Length: 505
Image 1 (cartoon, rainbow, N blue to C red):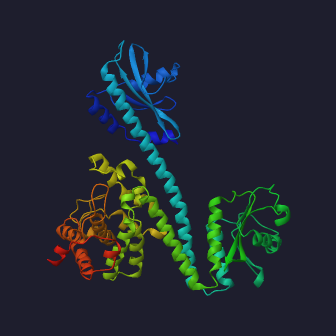
Image 2: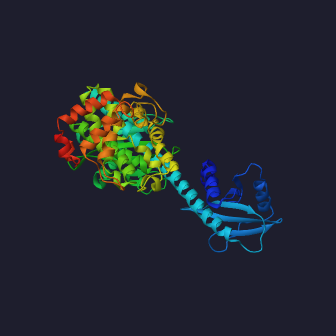
Image 3: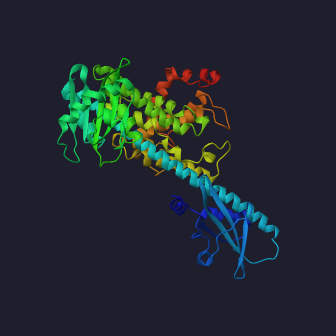
């Protein structure tokens, strides 16, 4: 993974950093951990070929102690520094200079700058790796969220009973690519199953009989999911009578009692059931436990959705404690504006998720930038400006959230066209993004940051009025002002400061 990540980095800014700090246009190159050159600063230099020749002739980048190292060959000197990440050596920074018997003082400044550049590269690699891991985890969690939405839709369209179980099991078998999905409830002599066969199962009746027997009794006693992948698993002898299938079995618990089991079975040739599959199976079993009480199931589903969103928000806000609660506050104010504008059900749902997850892209912003207590540099602010597009990259693969993506992606656009990421103007900015922008601006002003205390409600309203037509949509500001004129309870609940003198005036 490391070479691919290193190939993706923009080294030109590091070269500018080196030039500004040392005052010299150095013959500078970046090399992979194996020594192969990846990039060089000067188009007129053969440093890449020269380093490759040195490596081919046996140069192994030896390091004695810490810091910058020296290698003399072919009448020149190579000064190099290893770049280490959290998981080992990433590569080397190399500068070719004229040979000198003694190191000049200028080399001390060069060494310090290379160390700073190396630390910057290591941080950038770590941030990219963190983003990749988080994106993978988000993808898995959103698969679960998508399935829960599918459950909601089917449950609302069908009457309770075996037909409902049949349709849900078919959906689950297809979603999880399982050969057999079964719901077994011996107390009601119920065994409903659906198939999505990758190969024929000639003894399916026997498989279902085994599910109703010892497999159910064992799961009832264990009260925990059971995963059997290995053909040598000793439990096969007394749970599933040595039938050649991989199993995932989850108890369906209602009122603290195991009332049924949810079973997924696969041919041995298919991949093992994973820990993620087990978690998803538990989720499905939990959904089944509520089918006897329709409204209870719908409430549990909504709770799951909220918890999922909260988990995503926590992943963002854990990076910056000074913005904790920002997403929930922006979400609440946004939905108040949406309700006052009488948005339809579809728009309301899209606005719900777009406002709640509008800052999820900040997962990819380096902590050193996101949590910086002082004014940001131009480069640091560029990092910040990336986050709406990061939000789009994370959310765009989730079909259920496609309608919510524009709000999250464009909430930093400005009404006069000077915003980002695309410089949209006026009503070309999606409506949801214009609504979120008003709520986001209000919370940004009234919330405390590392470098300042939160300002009062009156200051925020004055500032919002000032940027009407330039930063924010005047029509949405008018709606927001009407809401605030009624002294909504959230002003006190969010501990927003008041300037009573300005309020009286």
